[in-house]
Length: 306
Image 1 (cartoon, helix red, strand yellow):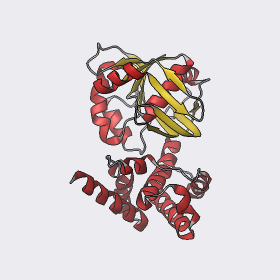
Image 2 (cartoon, one colour):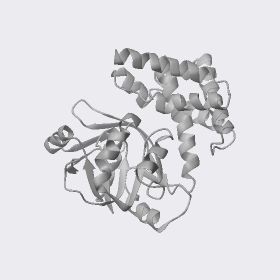
Image 3 (spheres, rainbow, N blue to C red):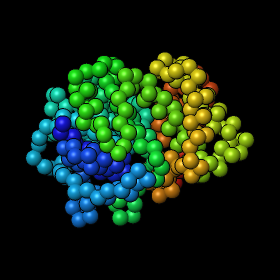
Image 4 (cartoon, one colour):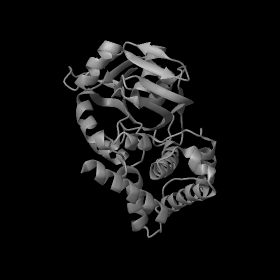
């Protein structure tokens, strides 16, 4: 399959690089500056799962249009509108659009830009960042990409995609319930990003405190209650399972939001915490911990933007 990865940052560069390393037909749609950088240095992955140095095929938004079988989107939510415009010349009627964004509201944005049929579901779990020289640094063993048809169907196209994704040094998992998994990931990452950015600490020191444990559990419970009230397709009691997952993470684990805040970069407060706080108000569910987290994040954004 012809695979187009939009961007060659920490997420797209990592998973796209693993597919390229395997020998799949992968192209990266990048900005001019990133193209020049990668043409000079190559795509370098430094990972506990194995290092590699690759020579990627690169295009820009002004390259000659051609159609790809699948487009992998891993941008931040505030970059999505621009990414959609950039990728339009490379999407055909049969192209699968696979988003790896955190959250859920981007699905509506993508189906409006393309179609219900073209957009499949996806998410990922990976701790990766760009190094100072543009290399991709992946620091923990977890490197999962989960995908599937949003209606749960085991379609012919998803089976072909499974074949393309198999036997790489990353874990690509085909799900028959990707909608629920996306909502569970949304609950997890909204908690993880909110807590670590609120306290400006990796997860280890926070959860070691009894008060930290209670705060994490309270936020998980609030988010589950909000989601359940407006009918999100979540498993009852999922917050208890996610608390166990958070407690199993490496002590030094940081969320991408926290790392972005440390670099004085934009964050996804409205896309993650803000969206659910708005839903909480609509369904009249109290969410004081969520509101505290969101206030902290908006104060950060105000300081960065001033």
